[in-house]
Image (cartoon, rainbow, N blue to C red):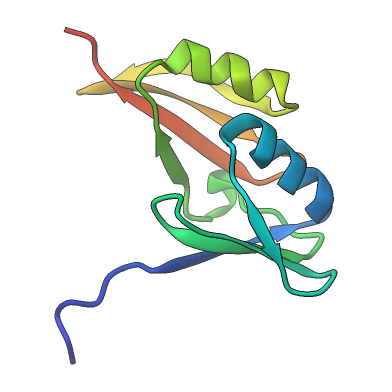
Length: 119
C-alpha cells in the first residue's frame, strides 16, 4: 500500500444543483462541469469534487465531515456568503489559533470558513 495517498475528491448531495451552483459561483467564483442533470463537478478549489442529486444533506451535527474554507477577511467573506444566499448556522467564534463561522448553502449542506487569529 502506498503511503503517498492523499485526499483527492469530495462529493456532496444536493437537492437543488442549479441553486447550489449559482450560490458557489456568486460567493466564491467557482465554475462547474455538468455530467447530465444529476451531477455537477468543480475543480481547482483546493480539493476537487462534485454535487449529486439527492434529498440528503451533509451537516456536521449528523456526523458528516465538515469542509472548511480559509479566508483572509472573515467578516467580508461572511458578508459575501450572505449576499449570495447562504445562511449563517454558527456565527463567528474564536478557537485556539483562529476564528471561524459555519454556513448552509441552498441545498442544505454545511461548510465553514476560518481565518488565522489576528496578531
